[in-house]
Length: 151
Image 1 (cartoon, rainbow, N blue to C red):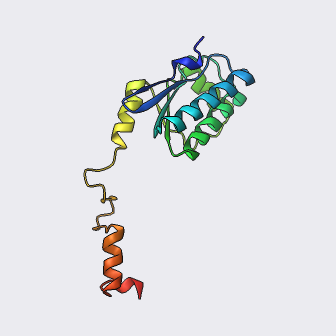
Image 2: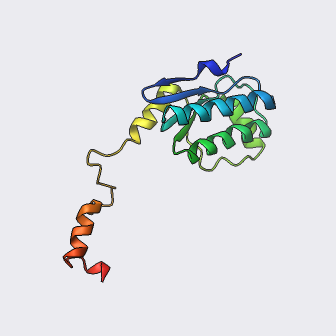
Image 3: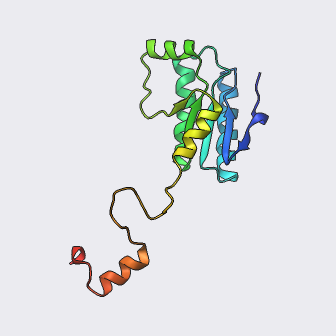
């Protein structure tokens, strides 16, 4: 059985192995520990490792996805890694809502996904093809009347 002490940081990512036992008290302890780690370590990325789960019912699934949503509310991204084929099949059969989930097969794939999500070389480039201003430039342009959008 995996326990809460296996939570670690790798490449700036919190690795959170979901416990093999999905009893309510175990899940509550796991959730509390992961949320505390995200806050105390200012983590922005979490890999939730579900590879120890050979069976996952809809209530267990709801518990771990609720935990992921809580992590998101703390400002961190979550990628699930290691779903077993049988678990995936069962979740599809149960018709659970998987919208918004980001998943990867392995830890390395999950870390690669996070690397791909990294900020572009120019931190002011949001990818829209337009030159962006920082707040100081915006303030200066509105003071001088250069920006017609604000009139």
